[in-house]
Length: 457
Image (spheres, rainbow, N blue to C red):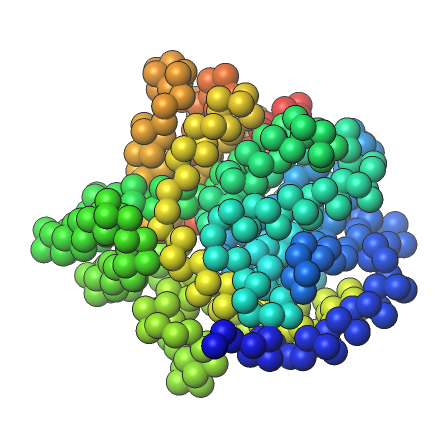
């Protein structure tokens, strides 16, 4: 017998009643009047029966340009189960940080930003029935197509504005699939928007290439000795064998094992930035509350989703932000279903999507890859490895290009990044950044956005 709806957060009946009544009063969210703050909207879209996706839109806030003169960027967080409306917004690129202070490097200077909590169950998004969580990329993509069709139908002012999908981590894997489906929908005329391209940041495009590069990367940065390198290489080969046999669930389990081997050999290196140290500690009551059916999933969730739901952000989202938004159903807690999101995607987690990137390039969609130098979980070596596997006819010409050094400003003498581009493919090597590039190198990330969206500085 399947799991019933009441195993999900709260009561579905109450959720639907509250949402229906509140949304009558706030059909498209609330427009803020303060002149110092960017115009913003938010709301829910029902992407399937009993599956609700939350979105939050900020109009570009540039002193010299109207939002109609700047692009629209949709930001997708990773996890899966991490909230773009929460983490991406308040920790990375939104107008305010989690202390509610203005962010000097907000991307609103260069674009309007659309944050979406996806897959359903992430952040303020929710499902009324636990059978409705996405289990694979196909469902994630189909849900997002419903959302985007609804968004561009109701927000006609954005239909002709250049639209980009920027992403981070597992969000990049989702962005690739969404970008291809959106391109096809635009071609068919089923979604009216000016889709230009996608940017894949520290993205989980080819899990195996990332895993196989962990040992060499850590060894080259003096974080593994010969003995440790041998141990990490051995478990990486186990993962490769599982993937080669299409045993993706087993590969996810072995991936957790590999991270454990790395932690033991590196004195708990931070997977998101090798220059910082953060020892994760799971309290007994937290472990009881996770409700994950397999112990390795508990460890993975703790490392890769719980990390983006820390207490300070959790308190902000479930406190002041919830009060401001006014449309969050009483039974929905920010991040309350994220464990289920992660657990349901476990079987799909280690599947590569290199072929989708190839299809995007063949369709002449602009593809940008950007990566932080200090990231381990999706290190740059692994990104370069899957790029070499592309079947894109112009790959050789791209590879032959010499990269160019980038600086955050003409006055700066410190190299901030390297950049290479050919036709509709580009790569940014972001120096001194970990997995969350905009958090670590905000100025360079903003410069990159302007370059990707072809804006003059």
